[in-house]
Image (cartoon, rainbow, N blue to C red; front, side, top):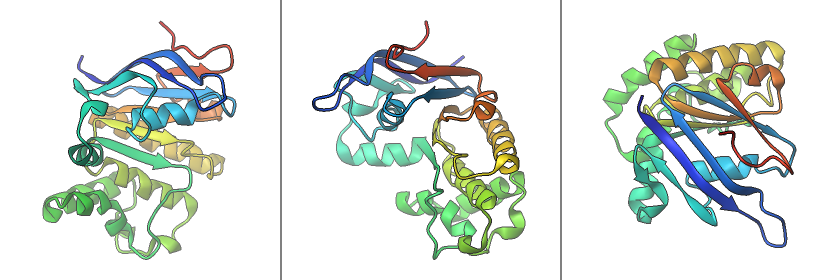
Length: 223
């Protein structure tokens, strides 16, 4: 079983505050969905930002397929993140003046990759998400649930090894939350992606293979 991402001995604290992460360890394999829960300020967003290469920890390392991501130079590092790490946000973060297909293709555009090749993948993703008929629709005309499905497709377009989801169902009602999680779980398993998902929702956590709770007295990952 190949390891996609490993977080080892992470430590991080903000000025004049106690550590939010202390000797934190986590290993994910392809196709594994890990839920992260905890109160506000417990380190959930910090953990995601470190795993995604957005925030450098005070100590520890993050390796993706054996590569120490914080050991890379800035320019190749940015390209590496675009190609290997997908993100899904609570607020969708879609570009309002682009249609569905162009939003999904945004990482392809930023990487200057072959649009013809990835357009076919984008259409396949839309079909798997029951959104193929919306490919040319302005995202402003979509419902919240539809916009979040577009965000799923955008996160998967580059076939990343790692997917990071920050409260992805926070803006959805119950029915759309269930639909979102079923679609997300199917793609994670099908494409063997390692996914870390932050949530406050117990229903969402039930879809995860493992759940890690971060708190004032519980900051270490389980053995």
